[in-house]
Amino acid sequence: MEINRDAQIDTDQVRDVGRSGGGGFGGGGGLPIPIPSGWVGLVVLALLVIGGLIGGNTLMGGGGDPGQETPVECPVGDPNRLDDAKCRNALYVNSIQDYWTDASPQNFGTPYQESDTVFFEQAVNTACGPADSGVGPFYCPADDLIYIDLSFWDQLATQLGATGAFAQPYVLAHEYGHHMQDILGTEAKVAAAREANPGAANELSVMMELQADCYAGAWARNAALTDDPTGKPLFTSITEQDINEALDAAAAVGDDAIQKKMGGPVDESQFTHGSSADRQKWFKQGYNTGDPKTCDTFEGAI
Image (tube, rainbow, N blue to C red):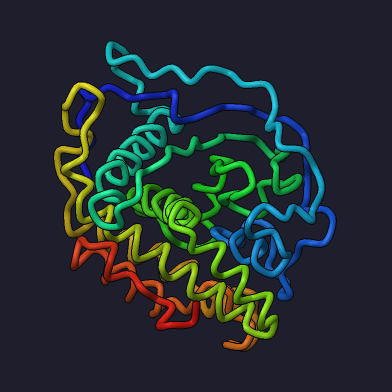
């Protein structure tokens, strides 16, 4: 992965709220398997499905005000700006949203609606309730925002073994995949299906997560074609190594991989995100086709 160092970074798509309060997932939300803090990357859609939060039914309490914002500054004239994790992640967000701005109407006939990414430290208040960094990156459909404590990248590398640089944009593209599910009405359909059949909550959560992985793969296929506001490419290249790093990250956050790291047996009945193999399969589906319309993981279930 080579970032175009001359590209402009639109920092209006990210917010930095620092340490703004919150802590834990309060109220009635929860995941019925114990995952250690720091090993829960990409789990919040499962929390939202199981906790009854899909469609904005915010059972967990808490407000939707993340906190006081600090401007993120990434001027083109700063030669060191891409050494800053906030600037690099802002560029990834720019690329993902530039892709969906075209891909959503072209493939689904639905205009894309931008969603900001909120950088926080340790804890944050959201419209889905208070959260801390232990839950990993997540999308909150109640306020249409993505949240991430950037210390998660160290945890992803050191605790889960996903050390490649392209793991970061893969994770962000996965979360924006959930935003697309919100835009397209998939989340609402899943909520209705879960209400009709509560016993299928975990299975439906897996389908949601695998589709988000597939959407991330579709973005990765087209990432080198995304531009900054002036038309300059955001990436000069996406390599096979980058895709392998995304696949490594997908495997690292598979339910079976996490259960093994916890020292217990693999229990497929408790899966909420899918196995490592399935997460890789669906990322490759999106990447190989470059077509998000091929990302139907539900097979008529909704």
